Length: 395
Image 1 (cartoon, rainbow, N blue to C red):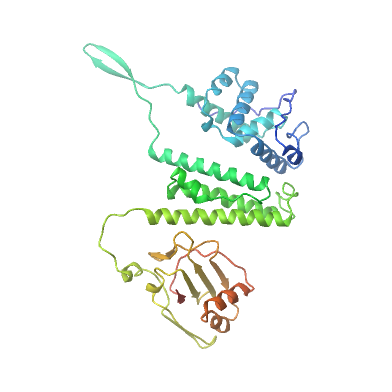
Image 2 (spheres, rainbow, N blue to C red):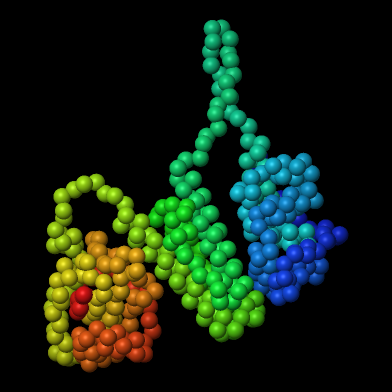
């Protein structure tokens, strides 16, 4: 069936009955959203609706909502077929959207078309006909059914990554539910259980980065998310942000661990000098105007170190790298430093490099304390080097 443009589904007059989850959280989350009157701020209302259904229901109910939508707006026959669909195929967001439509929400043209196309896709997973080929046997043609294509290894491993992502979402929901008092998430354990490949972890990382952006944006008074998160206190925002940052750091650590565990072909040991041979850096830097006279350490000092200070002479930025708890030490690949913790490592701009760098080259504790007290915007480094960077310390 081709994906054609369908008319917008108008909500039925008799709005379906309100759901009453058997959960004490209804006291805080409220009753099921009702859209008899169309909301003025549609984005906020949809966000609240999605959050409500995500908290109380799962794919089983999302599938049922889509079946109800198909029964009322498309074909009752399709609804019967949809009951046979595997729950893993169901998209939660579209399930909640179907339910909100049944509760009176007027769908936009794009939303309606997306929902209808999703129903067509789900129906096809059950009714997709087997292809037949003709083979000649003597003078007669005999039709033989062709076996259905099995999912390849990549699809299977991606599905495992999605399952692990679902477990992490469940931990996050518990964290919100108990206000972060008793819940700790062991990200590496969840990923290890599913044996998620490092190249598929980015699917999960993207989700959590968007989550962090949303919570960060919601703290701004004029943000479109501000109303939806108005019940959050500053402490709650701080705790949630810290939680998400830790998850992202653990995801990055898992990638590094899996890459390190990968058994390479047996080769001759490569000298450290060769491993760091492509790393760009500045050997010496002299600037009479700023009274700077810097001599860089050799890149071989970086390989295997667990902490390093690097200064970018062109941008006056000081990089502080700390190895993550999984890799333990740095390693270099091409022109990039790997194995550092994205949560602990920072980059800050120096206003008076000649004075400030003197503090950095001192003792370790004093350097760390001085760096923390620098009043400058802190950003996360990417690990890439250039010809302007001087390696000050590595240990």
